[in-house]
Amino acid sequence: MSEASAVDERVGPVARMIIIVTAIVALLLLSAVISEAVRMLEGRPLSGLHEQLHLNRIAVTEEPCVRQAPAGTNPFFQPLGNCEFLLPEYAEADAYSIFTRHSIVGPRASWRVLVDALHLFGALSIALFLTVLGVTNGMRGRSRINGWARKLWLGTTYTMWLTGFAMYRLQEDADTAFFPRITPEDMPWLRHALFAAFSISFLNVVCHANLFRPAKLKPLLVQHAISVVAWVPLLVVLFYRLFTLDTMQFEWMYTVELLALVTLYPVLDIVNGWVLFRTQVQGRPYDWDAHRHDNYVIFVVMVVSSVLFFVAFDRHYFFATQLPPAYRLGLTLAGTVGWVASGALGRWVMRAARA
Image (cartoon, rainbow, N blue to C red; front, side):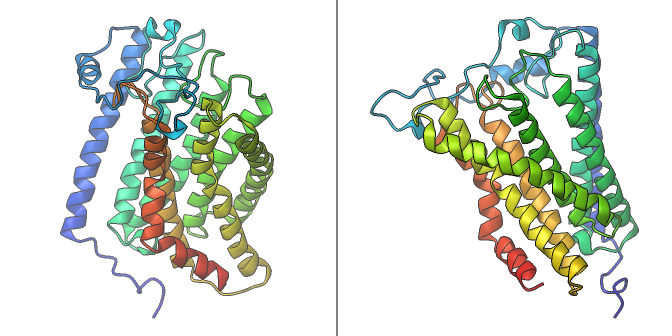
């Protein structure tokens, strides 16, 4: 049986309905992004929706944010945080975003609003493309809409990397909310390594999910090389801080949480790189449809984990006070735990090991 005929290309009525509903929701959210960006550029007051969200925040802890846990307590259950929720210049800024939960100030504010809006536009578009793929046999699908979704997903992810890079480079000195840093005194190269390793890992997984259909091999090899160069010194620093910082301080706790989020990413590079070595260098046969689908699932896990990581640190819309680290870790690891419990991780690793 040929590869093209191995999967039913027909898109059923339920799948069509899910795609239509998701597209409508995405369009509504995209229109909200455009409206919010225009409001920020014009400097108009916050909307009633923003005020309502603020009033309906969920109170989890009564304690204020602290940067050092009291002696004799368990730091994992103390409301440790960076305590930089709303600096005065942000609280008074017109360009306060309902979506990014922080303000945009400085002489390049207009450009930054535009880039932020484009980045959110890409994120919502990718959510639609992932839904389309999910209801049309994933990366094994051969329907026309499945093919369009995978091409648009690949292209939009590269576009989001560019807008993310622009957001990173256009930051002002006072920015602390969007791109995390371990301490305010972090060396510039460490923050650059964190951004490169974190963001390129997403590109690598998307390319493996679309490898040869339509992603090309050579650009992926370059990305793997950059990712390895960024991960090695970053993980050395993070593990050094894990064993040397004061465990009662926020800086140590943030190192733990950052490791919980990113330690999986080098493993993804290693396993996917092993598959490339065995197939492209040693000429071994491989089930590429299964490989693509594995990486589709991995990308979903990465997105869920990253979103929950930022949600866990929020104390503006979702939570009125700082979540203790134990709760934050639970949210961050929820997607990964579900992935492991489903057996998908084991099947992916064993398939790669037998390549």
